[in-house]
Length: 260
Image: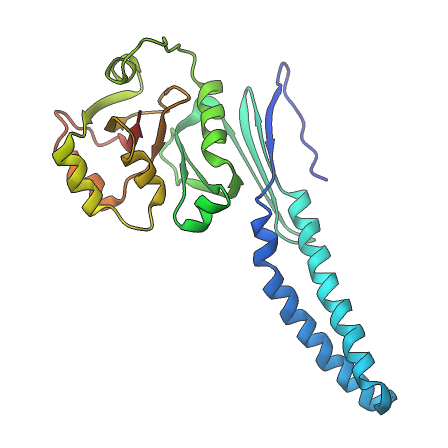
């Protein structure tokens, strides 16, 4: 079990495990191991008792198959995403002897988004959380997180110190956010163009585009949006197209589709 040393006044906000769909994907690996067990069983059957080759095959198939399944369950149980009021901690148990641990302070996060790339993400409600540090270093991804959009919402809420009034319009919300550098509203013409340009695999973007009011936002950090709003990264093609619609631009901004 991973041991985490908490800081003073640090509180756990949310704990998430990988989606159980990860285990479903590992069944193929376990089946292959089981077939290998069958081969060993046949070999031992020839050596020890030709009359019991079938029994040997079944025993070794079950032994190898179940061993691999329990091994992956162990790795799954040992991996977690932990969100506190001070930082994000991601611990991934890769094997019995190797693991990966990433920690990011909330104040050091430039952007965080949930990405759903295919229909399985939508059906089983899991996605990849993409975190970009303020330092501009390489983004890191946390895959297979259940209800990833909700997780991003929680992190954004914990990180952001400002407030949103219930009567604020989407334009007011974006204008009052210090992390928003510039934004443009997607009218019917722009929306139609983006729908035709967006990659079919970027299903999270299409979820945003179906909202009542959609904005293309240039930002220099995490933005604060209400619970009813959703956001997602646009494809590079859409990003390059919509950048030309902004009134101002800067080399150190990131881009996001936001739907209200």
